[in-house]
Length: 571
Image (cartoon, rainbow, N blue to C red; front, side, top):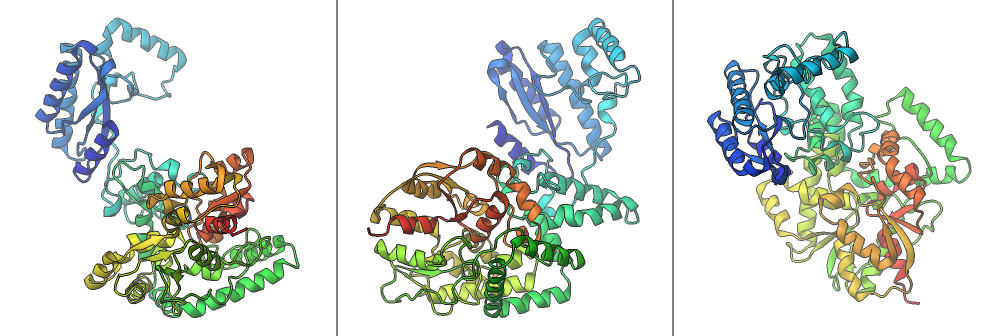
């Protein structure tokens, strides 16, 4: 209730208003009357009367949302604070602080609460420890009775998607770039600082220059920041908006051309992977890393990918043969699984599509792969890079193909990469016309995790491993599939370990190859957990995430489908 209250107030507060979280303490015997009077006082001064706290201790929290840039609101805020002191101290002999620090807001009222003698002792101690008054001036102790109405931090309007941010910092623990550049809260705070600066400000120019890498390039745009955020702000959407704004006409043309010729790009990518595979089998992969790093220094680290470790085999050029007439669902192999095969220390067969088709047939639920899947994609890469034209073209193309393949929605369609499933379910419908949107809503789009969970009753494991380590991806978290993924892992092993500190790995498609430092930073805690608790297998649900995890942690992460297929083969 208390955490939800912050979200409600954050959503309802006026644009440009501050969020001031306060708490006071009433004698527990008078908590009911105190709460009632506090609500009345909040309403009297035009603030939302939401109050929550720890009743057994007389501790009540509330949130104020004044627009402190407006003189009338500043006066309203000051009047409320004066009345609050009279209520808490004068009427109930309570405390102006319960859990929160006294800070500047209550500093003018310390003497009122504690009396002149006690406050004088505080001042004597303060002057002994800090004779020049340089430590926290006007915090807790002050001689300025109006300090709580001065030097407010402004909240300038910025992009709509981030305007409601209250800079609480709840998002920071979930952010993959938290240990390498900036967090969502910092990205928004920096954006607000830019909005405060005049156009010709050298501070603005410096902020804009540094924000390119610290704010934009190293944002995974995975959206996990929205999950702990009280007002559900997806800072990734803010960053994708900046990428769209930076996109030039030539980039848009290139993005659209890539979408229209995606089948050819797939073939080129597989050829490139085969070439890399051939080279790394003959020379140390560190040489490839040094070569790509040198090229990145000359051109751009946001254009040329690095090779931070062993790269996978190329995926097979041909997808497994399937029969349309006996199908239970349409299977759309994600393009990342049509390009990237298994790791170099793994057998090249079965490929992921081969394993998935075989597994489903074994469970009596055969899949059908249409002949024309190549050249189509979930459209997420264009969305992430802010390429609007290519994004829309591919979104429309995949919608039309799905509608055709599923016989106008009569069959489910199954995807073998969680990030692609997430993009198809949450994003595509926003970028197509009304008719296609209705088609997307009419179709059943399922991830391989839920599909495989449904297969479990029809499968028998010939053995179980002792321990598997699991990496739930940001997309499985968004889709609510982590429990299902753990159910599958429990079918495969006696113990399933998700290391403490596991968050989004930061790979974000090609972002981890463009900025491998992002993945290393994002998986720092996870790597430590893996070193403390080794496993027999390392499972996830997205190919590029598995690549990034291998490079950063040294553990051979693969799709859970491979192990599920292997352990259920007839003996």
